[in-house]
Length: 374
Image (cartoon, rainbow, N blue to C red; front, side, top):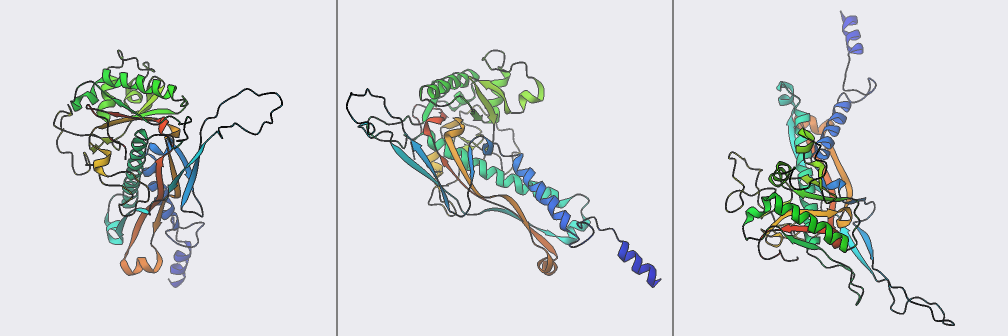
């Protein structure tokens, strides 16, 4: 019997081990890490729509602006020593890494043993969602800020174009933001403005809230949307399938929208509260200025972002995101797990975002007065 027991111990299959050796949970943790990243990647859209850089061995990253110069005729006999006006002018933009952004949960071993579903995968997805939501919200606020700014190039007679704000509709009602005809007109105005300001036509996108997006596709036969042959789930998915004026349209619940994130119910918005929305739908904008703990860039206070913004149209040069730590997962183990009979599961991210080229940013708004710069 002793020999049989020894053989069973030796031949025991441990599916969590790597090559049948080492930590019995090693592969489980790797699975969790993958689940967290998928949860992040599937729920963030801003990351791939702007310029993203990885930062190592530093706290900030510098971006250089180069303004335009002029052409002039050469006078025979004169030395060519550069234009007399000293052009082109140069300016800089620095994006700093904000403090570490985390989302965590404690998983008790007994709960994991008794649960009839995979607790780690479920928790990992929710951690990924939380990080992705914050990531998108900060980037969209940076783009909205850029749409209200003048160019950093301020040399006399060489001032570059700044951001653009376009009014949706002609009344003071917030319901103008959901009118398909108003939105289409705004798209063509935005495309023309970016053309006039010398912004590349490549990588132009718009991000609207879900009801705006669905208002557009319901009117797909009348409002000049491209890709009208696309139907069904692809059309309704909100993943950049539909275009207006060469601008791909995405939908998101994370854009600043009439003082909220993604949606606003009641009042004159024309957006009917569906009821039972829970705690995470229709949240108010929070303060995220440089004075806010943990934030080293300026995403504005709730009051500064304001209650009139209702959509963003931009080109990939509009904003930049700097990552020092990409979305990662850390899990306690060994002695810590023994002491607490469970694991702390932590998702983390270190990033910072800000506008880059204001001319590539367009903010849609409702009401008689455009939101103020901050």
